[in-house]
Amino acid sequence: MVGATRGLLFCLLAVSVTYVKGEMFTALADMERLVYQESDMVAALKQYIYMEEARLDELKRIADDFEALTKKATEDAESYLHHPVNAFLTVKRFLVDWNRVDELVEMSFASDYLSNISYHRPYFPTKEDFRGAALALFRLQETYKLTASDVADGIIQDTKDSPTMNALECFELGRVAYEDTDNLHTVMWMKEALKRAQTENPPSIEISVVLDYLSYSTYMIGDLKEALRLTEQLLDIEPDHQRGHGNKAFFEHELAVISGQKGDTGDMEEDETNKVQDSRPKRNVPEREAYEALCRGEQVQMTPAREKKLKCRLRHYNRPFLYLQPAKEEVVFDKPKLILYRDCISDAEIERLKVLAAPKLRRATIQNSVTGNLEFAEYRISKSAWLRDDDDDVVMKISKRIEYYTGLTMDTAEELQVANYGIGGHYEPHFDFSRRKKDEVDAFKALQTGNRIATMLFYMSEVTAGGATVFPRVGARLVPEKGTAAFWYNLLKSGEGDYSTRHAACPVLVGSKWVSNKWIHEVGQEFRRKCGMSEDR
Image (cartoon, one colour):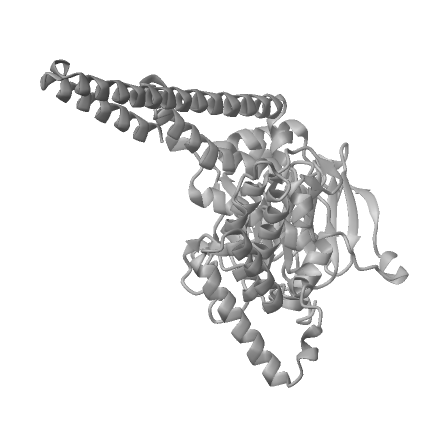
């Protein structure tokens, strides 16, 4: 708009110069015309000033908003970003709001600012980051049964430490879902955007735009009546909406076909507004439901006979190193046998591992069981780094400690992996060991250390909500506690894989989850964990 005003001002000045060169002063009529032109020029100039003031007022408002947010965030950045809505809105600000600042600033002469911002731009989040943050919120909704309204208000498990989302921000989330053909979440978030836009003055997003997306996605989940109603609402606001008229005719035709097939229009009176809840995608339903239920804390109750097998004791395992400071061993599940070692890693050691890992953190990969290549996967969202024993004394000490606690040699173990789970970070159900399938049999062949016999997992942070380690096949659940480590055998004594150890890292709901793990291999354990006499042992 400002550019157009400048163009108008330039054209008027050019016309004036032309008339002057034509000796306008020799004719009063021409001079009168110039007066009227000057009036137009003054109007254009005042419009330009108005636009400049509006631009600066908007920049000031944005700066004030940013200042308030950054003041709160920098008081305790880690805690602030633990809230997933805060994390999402931070990514959104860099991707959307700072671009708006650029647009406003570029309307004037601000070379110093533009030079400064161009220096920082390579470090800005990308569109893929924005999409990932949005998908993380959808994942949290799905796993923990959160409503779009509560997420938009920042109310997650009785916490509320986030600014509420406006209609436009809800719409942007809905559009990410729409572009991913996730019609369920599109409907959820477009409904929330519509509700908020109807109460905003002025609305941050045009209601007709929201209705356009919402009506189509509602049709896609099978609710034709509601789709037609929303389309009619759209046409009431924008009567000339071409796509709206086309959709209305199509929806009416489809309803007529269905009505004709049923032979009785009264049969169409069923409540279709609840179909949104019934249209949730079904993915590996039994395991998915068990996994998500465990993530929410709906744990399977153990029988008294099984509970008797659970022990809590101090152990030195006849190792001199542990005589003065024995391991605090707690058996928390019987089959598979899950052991927690309390207070087995200090805060100082944890901070040192974080410092060592920070510059090496990269998005975690999985090994393609067919190609053997490492690749990214939507079912594992975290960043990880690998630390060798000779990287630092702390890493060496931890490896030795694992050996003392488990009695297994670390000579053939993998390097210590340090991982950080951010917004909605998770790792869906998987096995740590390689199964004897045609496409997995050579998974660890290059290492020449055999299969992964056991796993040691250190929890290096407290997680406010979510982030549990769950075993969906047996109903076991381990809640992260800083300084505690979990240990289990992945293989039976026969060398066969223990399928009950299939486990998952639940999405982090609030907080940041740091863990480190050591995968211990078979070779070298022959006299430390002797073979069993049957395949099921």
